[in-house]
Amino acid sequence: MNIQFKKGVLEICVLSVLAHKDCYGYELVNEISKRIDISEGTIYPLLRRLKDEGLVTTYLQESGEGPPRKYYRLTETGKEKEHSQRDEWMQFAASVTALLEGGSHAAD
Amino acid sequence: MQQTEQEYLHTLKVRLSGYVSREDLDDILADYAEHFSIGKSEGRSEEELCRSLGSPDDVAKEIRATYLVKKAEQARSPENIWHAVMATLGLGLFNLAFVLIPFILLIVFLVIIFMVGLVMLVTGPILLLVAVMQLIGFTVPVSWWSSPFEGIFISIVFTIAGVVMVMLDFHLARTFYRLAIRYLKWNIRVIRGGEEAETEEPSPGTTTLSRNGATALDLQLRLGAGEIMIGAGTDETTLMNLTAGDGISTPRYDYSSALYDTVRKVRIRSRHSFSGSWCSDYSLNIWDIRLNREVPVLLDINNKAGRTRLALGELSLSALKIRNGAGETHIDLAGYHGGNFDATIKNGVGSLVIRMPKDSNLKVRIHRGIGDADVRGFMVEGDTYLTRTERPGAPQITCQIRQGVGSIKLEAV
Image (tube, rainbow over all chains, first blue to last red; front, side):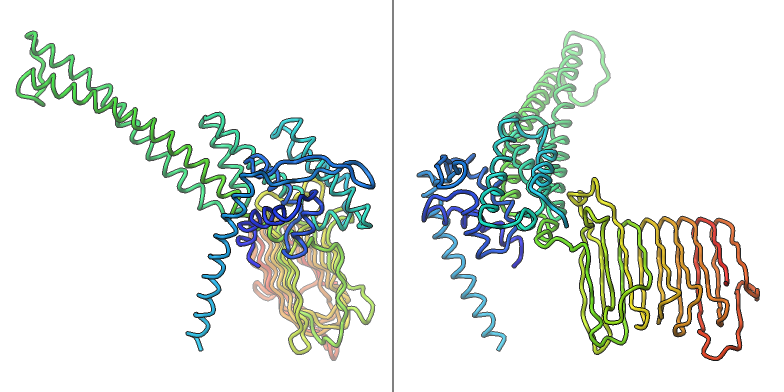
């Protein structure tokens, strides 16, 4: 898939995963790279930016094994943003799909 | 590609030092250290984790750009915005036209308005002085106005217009500054360098291509800089063995291989990265290619800079095209007993040494540039060098040599 697309939607993907549950970094990266082929390392800078923008906060939580892990949680602003971006995306995706399918009919 | 957690974190640290605060740096490194530690506890190797993380240089570039934009936003200065623009540019060539051209146009526009305003601001009071002097009774030959009062009026309007323009310019500059910051942020969010896109799969250090019924090989190499060594030395079932890098790190390259009927076409192109590959500091671009001596090869090599050493005597060639930009080229065809072929050899800057098989029908033309030519073992016919043999089945080789700057040593042995 075109890399330009990917980066644009990566933010909404991260917000969306975090809307379901709080995650630690590794878990979040795995969750996303399972579905989207991406350089995993770039998700951490994105998380930092989201934190800077006040969309997520972090907290440490003990894990069964090893040292405590850094968890990411959506803030209220983050939740709102996730909501509005999801709506926007759904509409956009539906329009593009309709257009592409229309285009293929026209070509037939 | 050998990669360890330590190397990854070290590269990241080096690339970020001086850009982000000590605290942030520790925090960033801790994120990646956590990633490694959890990954390893799930049984993944450090190398595998490095591979899926991608290049630490790309990560560092992105963090740097974000930080510099933030800095430019908080402390407004031409220097800070410049750094921010340059860092965003560093994310990939794709941004170049997007960021730099509007940015420069904008600066030019603001500077012009500022200059015009400044000129009006300075000439206004001077004109006012002239008009006042005329009013007092001095004769100053200025014909822009019919009376000193009109002169006073015009000069005051001029001054005010100048002040307004300069103020407006500052206001515009502030607004544009804010817009530029938003623009840069958008760039960081949406656009990702094309270079980064290609890092998902690192280039393998060694590649083995099995013969699989191929009756010919068409090998094209396009390399930026490095040392190329090509020779015979595979087993019968292998078509090609490729080793890239010095065993510690691997240059980045694109590799494609496809079979057309029974002709195997291989294309290798080293990747030009805008900022160099992240391991470029300590990597050596050494390319060692071993070919099957029975399969005829069409060899097409373009090396921009570096040494090219080809030991082709034991191979069978169908064509040879060599282009070396700068560096030494050494081609050894001594003992060649494969098929007939045509060769073109172009060398830019650097010495060229060619050894050819005497016991064959050679026809060599040299276009000499600057430098000596030392030719041995040939018959000379005008600017053409020949060898003749009556031996049946002796190969016929036609060769064009074009040399730029540097000596040529051509020998039939």
